[in-house]
Image: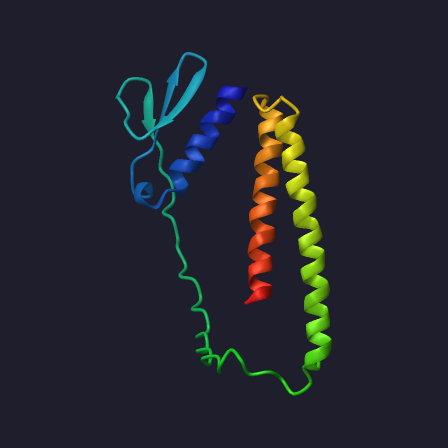
Length: 147
């Protein structure tokens, strides 16, 4: 039963392939099994008379309008909220303090991980690598604020 299903799938693939659409298809019987093939011998095979494949071209997609080039990156919409300089400076200071605190915590964590003596264990190495990556990211963010 599975073999007939496999043959049916193979036969469907033969019919669906455009380059094979005009090829001859043969049905060969070998004992209780039927085999579909594009090469038939005269013994136990018969050529199948299949209808031609009809193709219909797809409808053309509507043309895509060209996008306008963006203006400058510094243009701000009129309704965009604006913060005065002292408020922004205060926010930057708060952000800097949070990042510096987090950096200190990560550096302390790194020292603890390295002191634990399990620095050869895969899990420990993964934790050390993650903490080192965090430190690099925090330093990068702090450099953005300071510039």
